[in-house]
Structure formats: structure tokens, C-alpha cells
Image (cartoon, one colour):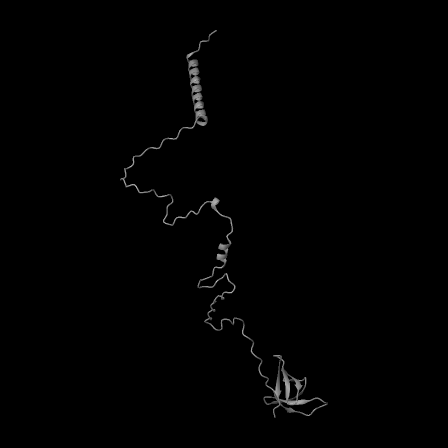
Length: 205
């Protein structure tokens, strides 16, 4: 039994059909763009070029990469090399004499190289860069004046320090600074205690 559709129902059917057809076209276009054959690249446009004046053709074309340097000479191929030793050529190289003007660095009998001497420094005291040396100890200010009388076998002497006169024997300290050492016939050894310096004083009459 056939159904009679109204006007509104017909409009809905037509609208649904149109939407379905539009969706089908969009689906076909999507599949064609992504999975179809790639389009051929466009041909470049040809631009007209100005005709250049004709120049006379050269006599011979120049080889590629031609430069102003001299060309290498071909000596043969790998198969033409001779591996045989030639003693006469080796002997000629061994007997070759050095004829240069400089020193032959390949001979142990050649003259040594002339090494120039270093130029002296403009400052003569430039090498003495360390601390200055300590000053020498001062001279002992005592004078050996003569012998005194011996007491119990010990020699005693007179020592002058300015206007002061001291009597001392071996081992005694004079003026809290000088120690009397070995007393000889015409001299005596005196040690300067602050400087640890020993000097010999001659006999002065």
C-alpha cells in the first residue's frame, strides 16, 4: 500500500538527498587529493631573450677547468711501471756531492752551524735579581795590649776598648760581647758573639 507524502515530507526528502550527494562529492574529492596521482609540475614560462651579436668561433675549444698554470705531463699508466731495481741509478744517487753554500744537514762531517751570540743586556745588573748579600761583620774594637801575671797557670792579658782596660783569660767575656779564645805568644783570638765571628788580634806594645 502506497503512502502519500505531504509537501513538507517531500522537502525533507529532497534536503536529505542533497546533503548526502554533497557529502559524497566531498569524500570523493578528499580521496582523489590524498590517494590519487600527483599532478604534473607546471612547465616554466619561456621568456624571450635578446639576441646577442654573433662572435667569431675560436680555432679550438678550450678544455674544461683551464687555468694559467702549466699542465701536468702524463708519464704512463700503472701497467707500464718497471719494478726492477737499477743499481747504476742508486749508485749515482749515493755518490752525489753536496754543492750548496750552506751547511749540509745530511752529513756528520760538515761544519757546525754558526750560532750568533746573544746580545748583552742593556742593564748590567739585570741578572742580580736576588736579595743583596749580608754585610760583612764589623771589625772587633778591642786591642791586645800585653800580658798580665799568670795566676794558677792561666794566662791573662790586657785588652783595650777605647779608654777602658780589661784583664781577661781564655773563655772569659769582655764588655758582655767578646769572648777570649786561644792566647798565643804574639796574638789572641777574640770571638764576636752577636755575629759569631772570630778574629785574631796581634800584640800591640
